[in-house]
Image 1 (cartoon, rainbow, N blue to C red):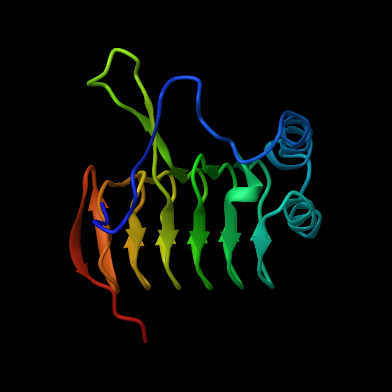
Image 2: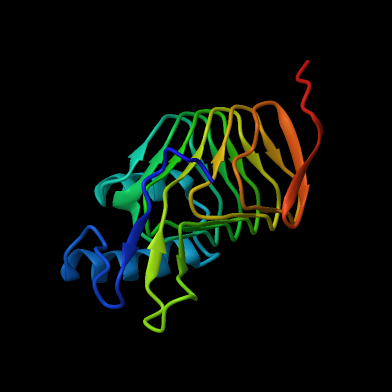
Length: 184
């Protein structure tokens, strides 16, 4: 976890979603109909809808069918990014995805957890950042507060619980560095 990240802790019931109840309800139905449903293959429509709800989306972004995005107003996606089928961006906190990054099918960006040391089970949220060229492999999980640095790779079915070094490939649960990423 990045030492510079500010920890957000919320007591049960006091979490700030960043939007009012009407906007959240509208997004809930838009997300079900146009994003989670595998029947909408139109990436351009999804990009337009995300922007309407406050997401910052760059050029050339591809969003495949059956994706799930919690709060678009807490999402920033750079240019030429790919979000694969059944990817889940559970952004209870801010998620920033850098240019030329890829979130493969079934991958999950998880910004929240609960404090198991308290009987109130308080919600803890932390932002996630994927720097330029980061690649999150199929069915992998990025945990709260993680920064996937420039051109890092999280291999298939791995779990990133700590920051990933630039130009490095990580694998396993928890993910460990297995080799350097050499781009030719």
